[in-house]
Length: 224
Image (cartoon, rainbow, N blue to C red):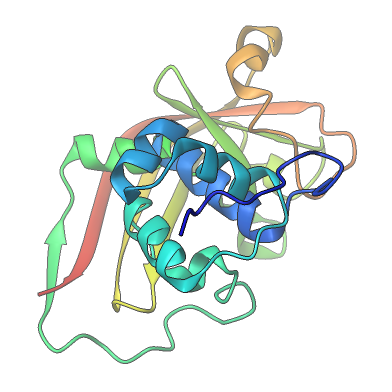
């Protein structure tokens, strides 16, 4: 039986579904084309397009192949992880803790979009999630002047990104230490950074901040 649906017209399926958005986001995160995902999954490129663009009900076999092609698990594509707190699964039988090489750390930083910046505020130390982008080796994020994340400017700060896979009981984390500075000429970074730096929190965020890394370290836990 063909995996291609009989009717793929926009009139029949006018809006993409959550599964399609997660497939497209994961594909973009890995830097893969639809053709490459289709080749990995052993399916037609048109079917990958259908899944991404239409509210598709994907058979379990196709879902398993898509998840494997996207180096993830079906539950994540279906959104089963969204409301579940990470790290609740038991540890793997033989976990292996390893240091990440600098190149691996930078690759993880390049492919994430939300990180956590740790600053010292008048009320004490605090950690805030921010949308960020990597521009010319520096971490760039936007905030509001006078906000708590703005306290990072002109100070040494920590910045962290991570990923946890509850299904396999493994994950990684990357920690950046560096001095934060205000970007006087925001236009110099707006081109490459703008698509990523549309803040989920909304509002006007005119202060552009750059963290210049002086130390980048990372660790991973793999299930042996």
